[in-house]
Image 1 (cartoon, rainbow, N blue to C red):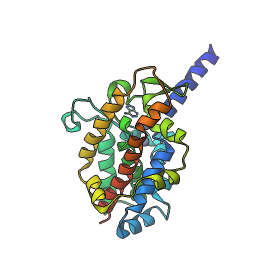
Image 2: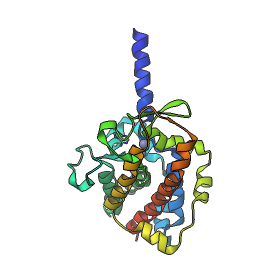
Image 3: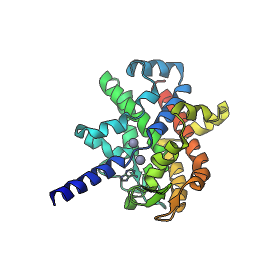
Image 4: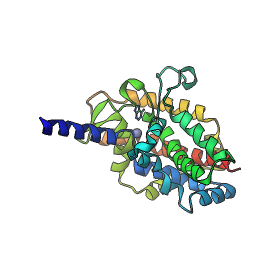
Length: 257
Ligand code: ADE
Ligand code: ZN
Ligand code: ZN
C-alpha cells in the first residue's frame, strides 16, 4: 500500500512537472529573435542587467524558479484562462494574478528608478519568459481544462495532451536547435515589423485567443496526432515564435527608451 501511495505521489509530481512548460527551445527562439531587434540603448541597458548573458540564455528562467517554493506566488503568472467568447477585460481577474498582471508587474519594476538592480534583473528575466508564454496559444486558455492540460491526446503513439503538444511536442520533434529555428524564420521589412509590434498586451492576448479557439477545435479527445497535425500547424508555431520575439523587442525597447 505504501508503495502504491508513493507511486501515485510520483505520478502526480511528474504530471505537474510537465504542466505549463513552453518548450525550452521555444522560449530561446523568442529571446534570440528579440535580441536582433533591440535598439542600441536597450541592448546596452540589458547587457548590464544580464551581465552580458543573451536573452535566449535567460528565457527559461521563469520555469526554472518553479522548482523553488520560495517563488510559488509566481506560478499563476505564466498563463491566463478566460471563456472563448469573452474579452480578457470583461472577466473578473484571478486573485492569484495571471499572464497580464505578471507582464505588467515586470514592466513596472524594471521601469521604477527606485528598484534595486537585483530586482530589475529578476523581473527582466521573467519578462523575457512571459512574453514567450503569451504567444503559446494554450497559455491563453480555458480554465475548465487548464489550458488543454486535461485534454488527453496521443502524440506519435504516446500519451500527451493538447497543452503539451503546443508547449513542446511539436517544437521538440521538429528537431532543430533554437538558433537553427530562429535563423529559419523570415526576415521582415521595417513596415512588417512595425505592424507586428503595434497594439498593447491586451490586443496581443485577444489575438492569441483567436488562435487558441482554433487550436481547441483542432482535436478530439483521445485523438492520435502525428505528422499531419504538425504539418498543418507548424506555420502557426513559427509565426507565434516570430511574433513573440519581435514584440519582446518592442516591449524592451520601450522600457529602455
Ligand atoms: N494551469 C491552469 N491553466 C493553465 C494554462 N492555461 N496553462 C498552463 N497551466 C495552467
Ligand atoms: Zn505550458
Ligand atoms: Zn512559462
